[in-house]
Length: 303
Image (cartoon, rainbow, N blue to C red; front, side, top):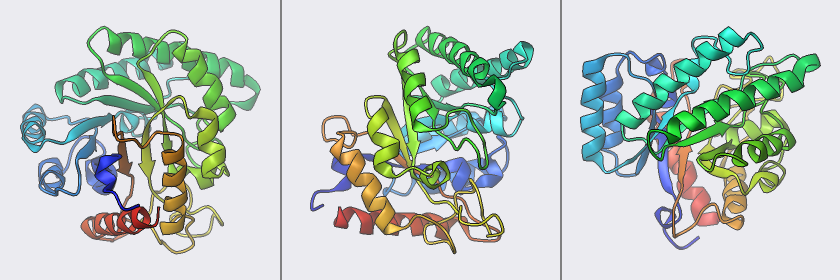
């Protein structure tokens, strides 16, 4: 592609994955967000909860100054607490929803445009009950967000039987779910992630084409799935080109090609497309981020 990628998308970075010490809402949040804010490669950033009021205020000031689009990842609020918004224990489900509502409040405060979350684990013999619980929770989140402004509520499609084992899930169920929510709420959409395609055992076309009308956000990353004995097996988001991994330049080219063909990547309203990469072991997070930028640069010129 000869034209600039910035014409078609806002290139983002998921802060709490690149710098995982911040995932629980604590740690070196200010200094690591500043690294992203001063890097003009990125015109979008995805943040998560920040527990300290003073730190949150400082981050808000930094992001207001940066001219970056901000998105909010609510996934750590569930993954680090063990909460499940399709829990069949209704009290537990309500606690998870309340947790995400706090995240929606924080997202509005931080000036975020979207709020992402994930579905939870389920028992196969009660799958329909879990699906119904997820629908109920999501409608509640959409209504809550809509009552306060125009924040988008975005379900990220995860693996259903390898690591996170989320009900959403395979593309057919993702489509059914999105259709159900969109009947009532136009502030809802889906998030696809290149990292998850190998875990779902779906190609880019298989994972994207059936839900093309509902995709409003995308992630770029990698995964190891060939053998459970391999390092970074599962949903670990290692750097591109990690040993025994599935995604590198070729796979990113194909993913972007499909996103371009369905009109998701576009010049009128460029969407946020963020790297979801995480250092493995003692890897330097800044080098992992540089790796991702190089891979996207190479993939874009080959698109």
